[in-house]
Length: 82
Image (tube, rainbow, N blue to C red; front, side):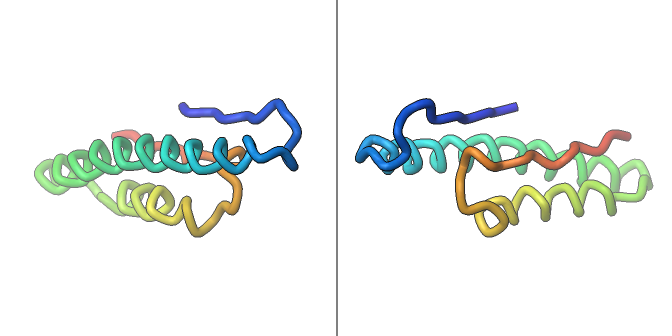
C-alpha cells in the first residue's frame, strides 16, 4: 500500500509541492482500488454473496480526501475478502 513521508522542513516551500504531488498519488491509488472493488461487488452479486462489506470499503476509499487533511496521515481501509 502507498505510504508517503516528507523528511524535510515542513515550513519550506517544497513541502507545498510535496503535498500536491502526494495527494495526486493518493487519488491514483484510491482510484485503482475503487476499480477493483467495483468488480468485486459485481462478483459478489453474481455469486449471491453479501456485498455490504465491499460497499463499506468502497465508501471508506471515497471518503479519504474528506477524512484526511494531510496525505501523510492516510490510513488505508482494510480490504474485505470473499
